[in-house]
Structures are given as C-alpha cells and as structure tokens.
Amino acid sequence: MLTTAAALEAVLAATPSFSSVRVAASDACGRVLRQVVRAERDQPPFDRVMMDGIAFAGSDYDDGLRRFPIQAMQAAGDAVLVLEKGHCIEIMTGAAMPANANCIVPVEHITVADGAAEIEAGYEVARDRHLHPQGSDYAKGAYLLRPGKRVSPLDIAIIASCGETEVDVAADPVIHIVSTGNELVPAGMPIEPQQIRMSNGPAIKALLESHGYRRNEHTHVSDDLDALRAHLALHLKESDVLVLSGGVSMGQADFVPQVLAELGVETIFHKVSQRPGKPLWFGKGPDGQLVFALPGNPVSALVCSRQYLIPALARASGADATPPAFAALAARIVFPPELTCFQPVKLISNAAGQALAMPVKTNTSGDFAALSATDGYVELPREQSEFPAGTAVFLHRWIAH
Image (tube, rainbow, N blue to C red; front, side, top):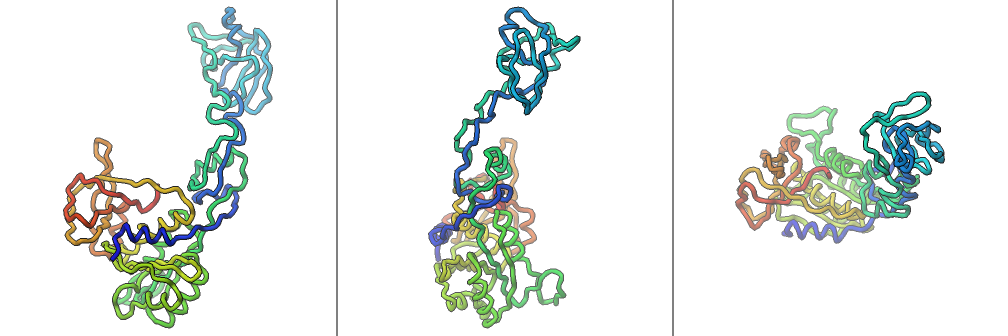
C-alpha cells in the first residue's frame, strides 16, 4: 500500500489545471485569481484629511496667528480649495488637504465665533499631523493581488478600489458526488429499521462548498452492477471530478473498481496505509476526469475528502500552496497499527498562547456525530505508536482559514 505522502503526491501529479473564466468582481469571492490586480491610482490618491477641524498654513502659525478667519468649508469629495494667507478652511474627515495648507487642528481644540476659528491655549500644532499622505499605502501601478490568491471579502475591496468590474479566476469544476448502497435513504423519505440515512454525500457537498467549489451535484445509486454502470457512465461524461462514496472495499457488492475499469478509468492507486480511509481508490478518466472512490464509512469519507480531494482541487485551480499548520497534542495518544493515523481533534489553547489539539474519540469510523465537536484532524506518522502530550503534529482543519 502507498503511504499517505505518496498517495497525495500521486493525486497531485495526476491533477490537470482548470481553465480560466472572466467573472464579475462581485462574484469572485472564494474563487482563485488568475490575473494580477494593479493599483489604478496612488492610495490615497491625494493628501487625505483624517480629522474634522480646520486647515491652515504653518507659516501663519509661526507668525503668531492663533485666530483665523474662516475662508470656506471643504468636505470629502469637494474640489481642492486654495488657502488664502492668514485664513483657515474648515475641513471634514476624508477631504483632500487644501492647497497651501499643512497644519490641521481637530474641531475639539478650536472655538468658532464671528466667522473665525481660534485654537485653544496650550494646544501643540505640528505640520502634517492628522494627514494621510498621498501614495503612502501604495503607488499607482503597484501589484496588489497576484494569481493564486483565493479571493476574500477583503480582496473584493481591493479589486473595486482598482476600478476592476471583472477579473479572471479559475473555472469552477463540475463535481458529481455519487452515494452508493442499497441501505441508504435520503432525509425526508420513509425508512426501514435495517436502513440508514444518507449523510456522506450531503456532507461532502457542503465541505466542497466551504472551500469555494460550488458546481456540485449529489445523486444516489443502488448496489446493482447494471444500475451502477449506467449511472457512472453518465456522470463521468458530464464531470470534471467524480466523487463516489462506498463500494470500494472487499465485499461481494463492492462493484465500484470493476465498473470504473469497464468505463476506461485508469487506476492510479487502491488502498493507502492510513486509518481511517484505508480502502481509498483514485484514478483518472479517459478525458482526464479525476475520480475519487471513497470508503462508505462517514469519518473515512470526510477525512479522505479533506486530505486528498480538497488539495487536488486547489492544485487544479492554481491556488497558492497553503503553509503547513501545526498543533501540540493536548493528551497522549497510543496507536499501535503501522498506519498513519488521522485523529479528529478539537482545538484549544493554553495560557502561553499555544495551539493544542485535544483528541476526540470516535466510536469507529461510522461515528460521524462525534465530528461535530472537532475542528479538524491531526496526522500521526506510521513510524510511531506512542505520541506523548505536547508532541507537535500536522494539523488539517476541516474548513480553510
């Protein structure tokens, strides 16, 4: 069996690049940028006033003036006024600094009477205080966003500030999720005592959406060879990525690997030395489609989706590589099998500000209810069997941060 590292390497090596599409900037959040976004203008584009108050010339102040006739008022968005000698201009936060002015005194330190503003006694005036200088954030033409950045709400502000109404992003792949099994019944439908509710498909779909992949469809097919063959043939043709849940172990009704081979899907690997998720199957379709056949146990399916499917989609989208995250174990773990252990954890912190991973026990890999209390899982290498509290381990969050 492949190690987990070798399995992930094989998945990424087989992953093609998605094409680029141009979308409205308002629709780009969560998508992977495929272009440079450059500054349209200096930011701020003028010397921006940061306080309500008065603006005047420091030279007049040096000459002893403390009471200034008010020449005019200039608000944010107003054309820049030219200050007359010996006068002040009332200014508002966000306004451009009047020409010839270089001092600002906030409104709380002045009194206004008879058309003049007087600075309170003892207030210390300084040139360019309360001023946001032109270009001090960045200069016109500066590279603000680069290809590979997953667009956040904060990036939308940058894109808008650069005057862009559309941007190039990675195309959303068409992902089809297929749950297999006679025992599965969707929510809202009558159910027999021997059956179980369908949960893997909806959970995988939600996981994909939480990572920015929205063009997902979920269907169900029974453990019937002919039905499975027809169902997978249809969705393989329509998909960029096909994700199956169940039917990959060694049981007599585990037809998935056989049917995929009949449909021309190349097997890249089957089984990985890990727990949970050992039966994982991965291959590539005749038109380059990625095919992930996940174990049917819910914990296994979700761990494999997060460990292999999400990184493959990020690679295909051209997303920047995510730096590894670490946490220290909050409790001792003993795991004797010579397998990589993916242990669900709840994140806590100590008084020193250290991130701690508290193991959360699952009652077999079918206990998906226990995952609700977790933030992700840690990766415990196969070469060890005992992991004392305080051991630094790789951390994989369910949802990207």
